[in-house]
Length: 496
Image (cartoon, rainbow, N blue to C red):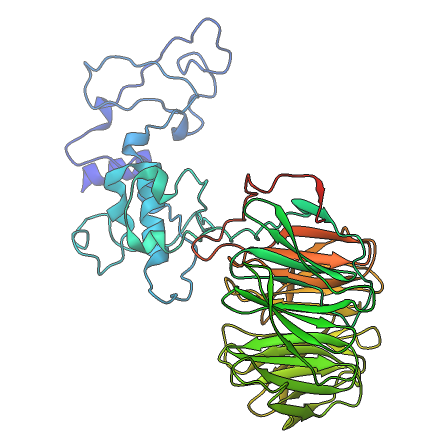
């Protein structure tokens, strides 16, 4: 008891095997240039606090040690794994585990490959029994962010193949398709009429372009740019419409006198002449061996090239000139548009939402019974119809007179040509009707439109007496923009 009492009086708690006499205060010498270390032997402050003791030794033979006030920690002995680098648990996403995987990847990159399992969840295999896997409160917090493709810790850079991590790397958005803003070829077309109700340009499936110029029809072969004069109607007549058959061998011509002529395009020989209209025939449409014609006399006639009569049936539904006519792709429905501001499917269904002449009509090649129509200057809208029930599905105000519409076969997009007041060409994505491109170049209304047989190029004609060729649609196999072909050189040439 006496020895315990004596130790308590001294104010120093010592082990039972050690006495106060075994304690020794070692003095050390200060470095010559250091003013911040203290010699305990000569300092009057040495007895003030036990915290100033630099070395306690239990052995009288221990050597003196020198030190300074700079403390340099040893990382190898530091417990860096106790510093949590994970944000608070966030709601688990579908396919879960991405946050934990990202945390393990981050820690393994910062602190070494063996460190990743220290912060694994309690239920992780292979690390559950680790002495350092006990949960601890985060002292440091790291806000996790999705690792982008250019991040130094992205899986592609680190060589990891963890599928849970690859799902977190978002793919970059697909860039919008680029459409050339200028035509790759321009043809002079003198005497190309500036008349909204006529249809003077058509492109055959055999890659031959037919153009009505004044009293003549000219054929331009796209493969070699050869121009052929098909016919001349004489001084008393003029060309009002041209339309190729789907096979591309025969071409029909509507005249200002109301006639409908059928010509062999390869031999430049007239095959048939149909009558029946009282005045000009401004629009034509083929359906196999049936040829439909629309006229200013407000009638639609059905001509059959296999019978000798002029026409086999007549559709009476319009109250003004018929200027738009298109057969559906399955040849079951005929859509017609006229200057009486209506569009009718057969004479059975009438749609009167347009408030101006309807010349622009096109059927969707991607969806049965889907029809698009465009209105004139007082309307300016493109409207979409379900022809099975007559419902209007959508409409959009284009801001300009709609002269023509064509639906791409390669992609679900529509091209429209316009007149007053911007004379532009516009490409739309359906059904969102977002603009893909706006093309300008014509100085007058873009009244005529035709599409190449491969569906990639369109040709537009205007009252400025030019035909312009534009690459607007991709090919069927590749979404890349169509490149100019060598056979269509740049520059302007004459079609006659």
